Length: 583
Image 1 (cartoon, rainbow, N blue to C red):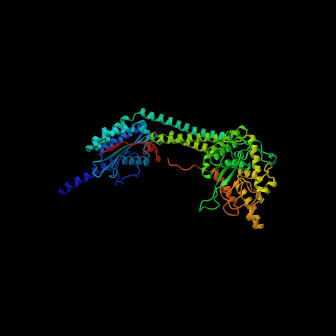
Image 2 (cartoon, rainbow, N blue to C red; image 1 turned 90 degrees about the vertical axis):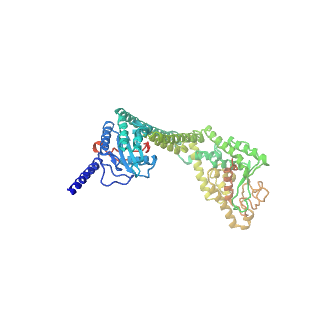
Image 3 (tube, one colour; image 1 turned 60 degrees about the vertical axis):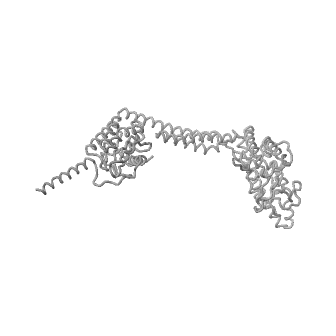
């Protein structure tokens, strides 16, 4: 009898415990605290792995959640776990967001899911609660502040007294009362409006990008002009200076433009370049140069004339010379030269618009597009709607296309295209002639370009054409050939022609401006007795690169179907927000 009395209560208790487990939807083995979480069970919405709810509460909660979902389509999941390390709201919100992403709580595209997650301490008396809502749910049903009020006013007093059942049911009653068809309809309207805005945002980006491409196609391309010998002319038209040639060849001005202008002034006898002595320990070939003002030159075009005036103005302040270390004073004059050349190219009918202004205008437009795209990304953090993401993506793509096309927007006119073809042909011809010549005199004698009648002009136009290497090779070839024929003469007579506009360092020996063709000592192109033509090319580049001295002063979502098949609908935590706290 005693054994039967003991055995019956034990059997009854086991049956009751099994019933509670079945009613609560629990599994035989409690999973580890997530994330990651175990796979959801079809049709189940309450997962009490911490074992803090009664069977009746779980049944009531399942019924309320089913009613909410059938009435509005919004999905709610309740999950409890023992996780002492999640001891603040941020950690609990992160756990809830991970659950929403893994299970796809809420409908895909609506993101109308709500996760009520309990991270319990080991004593099952205290913990953290997160009421985490997807972006659609927090926009159409309960905002972050409203859910926080539910926790503070309804849940927390009960949870603090140890009434877990009452805390959960109080929250679900508020959620159920708020889940009205009107809110569901508002979410549907918002989704439709957002879809339209997505299309408009992408269309805007496409229109802007296509507009940039169309503008280049219609206005940025040069007229077709065949490059053939019939375009050769015996002399350049008025205004086609070496500096202007760089603009027509490249569609823009550059440092080569300034170099060509300066060498052109030197070839005309207006200025000279004075080499600077290398500092002790420097490579003897690392030569820099300053500028000496010699005289005015009549008949100069306005861009070069203004540049020469600036050189004269600053040179007169320092005994007619501008040392290399003070060339930064000419930087405004270099900028003015480029601007004047662009204006002149438009006035002469060679360019459709000033290249600098055209490029700046398109770069500004592309920068504005990218700026708005970045602003949309920041707004996306506050208002997580896909329309803002589409706007950011569309404008970013348009901005990249616009900025990429900006340098190609300047266009030559038909007459400018003709000159471009002419200059391109002369560049090839001059390059080929220099490749087979041993001296600049031989290049001039071959007359590859009709108006290059002196070595000085040849140097100026070679710089304009960007033939620096070829120019250096001609000089080196001439000198090396002479040295092989007569080494003694090579030491005293490097070449029958020397640039009168290249002066040795002040106070040093060497070739003077008036002694072309006479003896030369160290310092013509380098510090050694044998001249190094590469130094003059490098020194000319150092002039245009002068600088002023420094002074201090979404988460992914799981796929799934609707509630009718029992699983969640594929919602995401992207743009979601959490509420809740500890108890």
